[in-house]
Image (cartoon, rainbow, N blue to C red; front, side, top):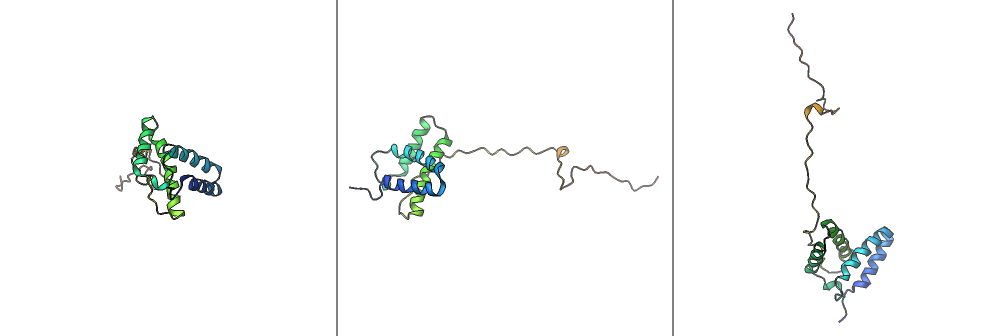
Length: 140
């Protein structure tokens, strides 16, 4: 049985769309990551064959091979964008298997900036760097 949405047909259309809109850099980026993803599933010919478990298995395999969370995130971002193009721009009624991928995003620890001591605060707007001078109203 032939697939409803053949991978290679729509991958070619997506790449020509990318080339027209965003140029060679975007095409090379997407092509590299999409080819790596689809090469992991040689038996899946149709886009409707992919599920969340396939994406999770792919991400786990990348992490197990020593890839960082950032690399995994970059590769899955390219795949997510491809599926989003299929759904939003082409109007296909597909489920985006990468849309549920939230575990493999690199999270940066947010470090609060150290507050400056008041003696180093030199804001020209608030004037707090000016020393307060007390003026005595008593006469001698």
